[in-house]
Length: 115
Length: 111
Image (cartoon, one colour):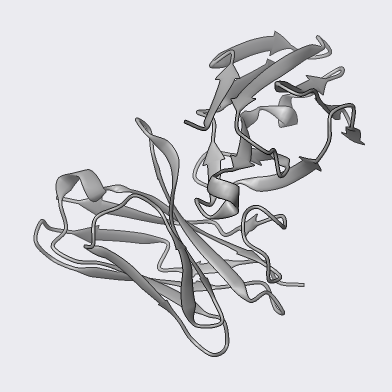
């Protein structure tokens, strides 16, 4: 069974630009969560989508947004990029439950560098 | 405030030298504790889920245990391929805040 896939794997952007990252969950998984990983803050929860609806949201500014499609694939968007947005963005999927109910399986991540 | 603290931050062992990694947590109403392994440049790889105090799970050279305040990841006779960062995480906000991760333990096994 294929795992979680994320595209692109690497991105370089400049301040002020916007970026869209994509995530395809494990087949049959309907919940997709996004996390940001930085050396200073570690892994931090961004948001979770289930059935095309944002179910939970972490403590990030509104520049960070996402959506989920009917096939459970998800995208996240970061607008007006800042230097501090440089990070590894990880997507995780689970069958249907959120973080408190089921194991989440992570993709390889998209490494974003903002110059 | 829900918190997860891992220790030590880094650990260097000789091949075959057993040791334990610690994950202490403060969360109301534990809904599970997760252990992941992360290799450089990759996403976290799921290892174990523990749900109740006294529970233990094993996989090859790894054994995870859980008490009411902390979890241990015991590594028996490690090999160089066990070198990685080990992360523990708990669901917080009743799961509404996703997983809260510790900063991880960076483990190096020298041949």
